[in-house]
Length: 392
View (cartoon, rainbow, N blue to C red):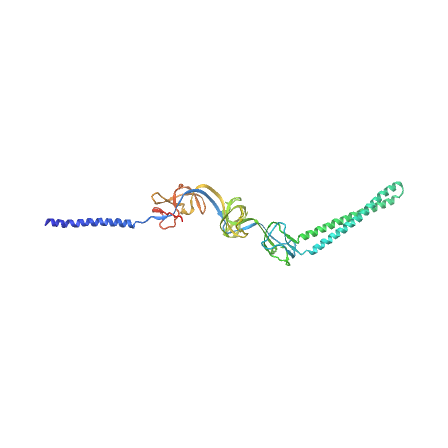
């Protein structure tokens, strides 16, 4: 009886132990199953490379030609001949258009006829002057021998001088006739518009038969021909006055064009405006001109394209750097530890741009830092797992 009661008392204890072990095992399993998985993050290694400090334009710049002439004939008149068309290439000195000039050609012919008449008159008058001078010389010999009176000699000398004066006057008429021809020639040149340099005709505002007039002072009129020298192009871009002091002539730069995607062109600063533009009260800028290092042959680079420039004013080579996107506010980064836990690290930086930031202290080459800072849960102290990108 006693043994039966003892067995009944031990049974609950054994059951309790079994239940307790099962509870512990279930709790351990539940804890294992419910434990948080490591957060996948992208990591970037601290490496060495070039870091540049640069300034960019505040508004879109414009591609311009080094030489551009909006021309009209020096004189007004009716266009008699138009020798070029839009888009045509011309060489220096080529005739672009001619104005009606028949009246000037008539004046030139008249002046040449007058020149011939003057030359004939000179031949006649000067021949008579030479004959009179010879008579005067003979008269001197006859007076010495007593064959003629001194009065006759005096008349002969006076006649010789008069004829010589007529000869000199006739020669002066020749000079005047030649000058009149030169004047007509210059006026004829004013009726012809020539290309001052080689280039391409961008626009024409006059046609044959229309009247072309030069622009008087203070009155803007359309040019007859717009000529562009597209062999030399540059970008004119506004730089904020805050950054203007960093820009110097000769600094290297990069040019990008909206019309030519995916291409960057090398350039160099060739001019900085000596004044600040005040087009807007809160946007004061300095105009900077950047010339192309080499014009592209394959791309159709046109005057007037919008362009952006990035002017490099300082550069460090083979310096310690990190991607700028990995930097938190307050110059902090999340460092990936050997135990998989993230550590917040404050660093000292140097040069910086949109792509890279120079590391002065706080990190070593080869350290790994988080670049996917926008992912939920990424912060100091959490355990993370590096994300492995598979190559396609």
